[in-house]
Image 1 (tube, helix red, strand yellow):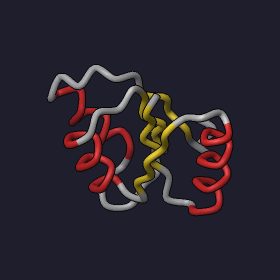
Image 2: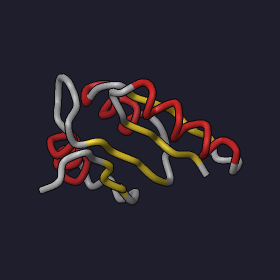
Image 3: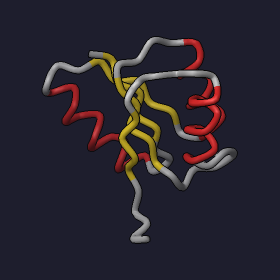
Length: 83
């Protein structure tokens, strides 16, 4: 399974990536919304783990763009927001 992890906090991304790789998943990481869109549009992912608060393009904008392009991979929203 190939996962795109979109997280701008390098410590959080490293922690999540390490855990997923220990479970034998292939993980690519994007640090901002523009990089996330590029990777999602040019790669084949089984899952996207998406932070909402990102530089350049926020997570909701990334998700809206992907869905407008009819991308059907599941997206798991990961955020520190409480509302």
